[in-house]
Structures are given as C-alpha cells and as structure tokens.
Amino acid sequence: MGYPEEIEEFNERIRNAIVGKTPERKIWVTSLSYCLRKAALSIYLGTFKYERTGEMLVGSVLHEWLGNALSSEDIEFEVTVEYPLEDGWKLVGRVDAVKGNYPLEFKFKGFNGEDESSPKTPDEMNEPPKLAKEQLNAYLNMMDKKLGYIYVFDRNGLSFKPFPVERDKKAFQRILRRAKVVIEGVRQLESGSFPEWIKPRYGKRECGGCLFRPICEAVESK
Ligand code: SF4
Image (cartoon, rainbow, N blue to C red):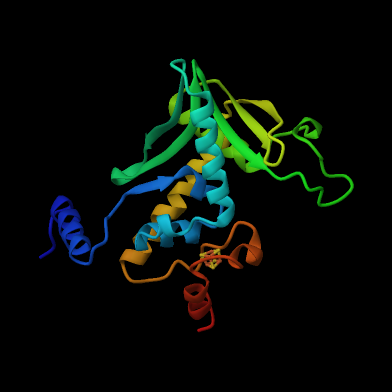
C-alpha cells in the first residue's frame, strides 16, 4: 500500500537527511539562464555551492566592495526574493540592491575588446547584457515592481552605466516554463532516471567547464 503524499514527502526528507542531502525545493533564478539539466542535477546532488567559477568569485569580491563603499540607510544590499511555484517548490534569487522602489543589479565586465566592434567602455554599450536583463526581469516580476536598473561596471576602471529595465510579464512566463523543466528533471532523477531530454541552452560549448560533464558523457555514450 502506498503512503499519502505528505508522508511520502516526509519519508523522502528522512532518506535525504540520512545520506546528508538537504531536499531544497528551490530554484535559483540565475540557474535558469543556463543548461536546465545542470540546474536539475545541481539541486538533486546539492552541489550549487561548489559551482562557483573564478569569474563569479571576482564578481563577489567586487559586489562586496560596492556594498561596503555605498552602504547607507536608503539602500539595501543582497535582498532575498522568493516566488512560489508548484508542489512546495519556489523560485529564489538575491537582488544586488534595492533603492526605494527600484531593484538594482550590478554587473562587472571586462572591456578588453574581443574584436574591433565590441564596446570599449560601458558608455559604448547600447543594451545591458541579455542574461542580466533576463534575471532582473525575473526579480521585477517576483517583487511586483515595474522598473529596475542594471549597472554595468568596467571591472578594470570602474566606470559605469545604468540601464533601465521595464518589467516584461511574457519573458517571466518563459522563465517559469524553464523552472517547470527543472522540476521535472529533478523528479526524474529522484525516480532513478536521467533527464537526457533536457539539452544545454547554448549547445555543447556549455558543457566545457561543467561539473557534470563526466556524468552526462557516460549516460549519453550508452
Ligand atoms: S555537461 Fe552539458 S548537458 Fe550535462 S549538465 Fe553540464 S552543461 Fe548540461
């Protein structure tokens, strides 16, 4: 005889606690910008904290510096946001700062000029980075705000440019659909099968520096 849903969920928590795994039913907004199989594996295996790249660490240091340098009563840094999804899952994120009614995201970028046409300073940029826009838009929707700003900083000189981002409900629906894919992927992993149908968002080049590459390669070579 099967167990009621609540009891089965509790049983699963006990099993996870025994093997030292926390069943965190949360999906980070940032993880939805990349391979969703990676996001599912990361939740299932609890490896999120081990996936920080050197680039991300440099970003963290600069974010911390900015928070310390600009701290005042009218601005809040590192604001946690949550949005409920199905079956106890939630979408979570950390907005870099909130000033008044405006969520702010800080991006630190190198301007080494990959080619002649690429911008050499934040001022030369016409648009904010696409993924930063996608993430800030998710926060705007989660926080029920209409407008936010992405500050792009030159990592070397710290010149900057703020880009306004207006709330886009349709784009947020796409993010929610991506979150559903992750939930499905985790469910599949929990039931003992591998979500091979979830493909990397940017093709195989995304697999290069991925922690899960050996697992994916082993499964896909069968
Ligand atoms: S190796 Fe590639 S397909 Fe597998 S999780 Fe990583 S990015 Fe996704």
